[in-house]
Amino acid sequence: MPEQVNIKEEIKKLIQVQELDAEIYDLSAEKGSFPGRLNEMDSSLEEKKGGMQDAEEELKKLQVSKSEKETDMQAKEEQINKHESELYQIKNNKEYKALQQEIDSIKADVSLLEEDIINLFDAIEAAQAKCEQEKKIFEDEKQKVEKEKETIKSEEKRLSERLNELTAKRKEFSGAVAPKVLQEYERILKSRGRIAIVKVNGEFCGECNIHLRPQVINEAKMKKNLVFCENCVRILYDED
Image 1 (cartoon, rainbow, N blue to C red):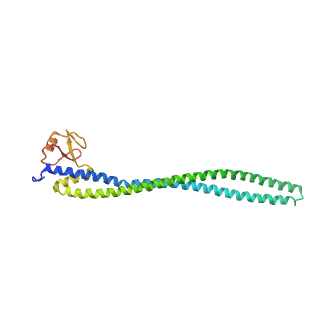
Image 2: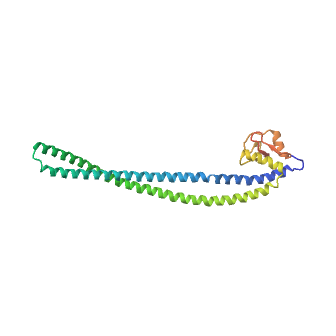
Image 3: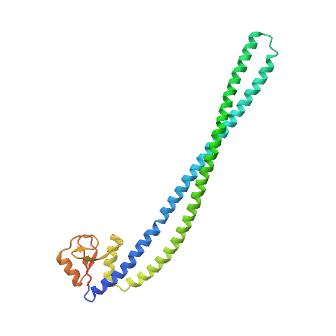
């Protein structure tokens, strides 16, 4: 670093800049999580909507099946009435018995259809209850999602305003740092994320916790040049 740069003073400035950068990093991460949270809410709502639609589809199938069986039963009852009228016109005993057997067979079919329809009434009643249940689950989830989305919208606005404040303040503070010092700091910040400058903790790096060589510790104490951790390459400083 050029001789005119007072490393001790520059480090103080960097610490202030880093406090802002750390908050900017955290708030940006929080704000960046919102799209994922919104997607999760939409997925949950779609799942509940799918449950409601499945229940409605099942109810519809049962109702169609009941309608079909009722139509089939009505047709068979008309067949029975027709055949019973035909019995009075038959003179041949063999034909009479054959037609009577046909009537009995159709009546047996009607009996089975009646049983199926009764069972379908019960199934439809249960399906209707299921529909109401799934609809309530969906509506409850919809209200919950809408409320949470409003909360996120409000929080996003607050974070954006705070980030704007911090960014402006950060620009002011970083402008006071020597350009080459700031360049080193920002290079490390870009690669390491939230923390670029860290204090020496006894004989260890305060961030990666590696044991530091005595020479590195002494250089950090002297504050003549920027000193870097040999492991995580962050800028090291020693508090007086």
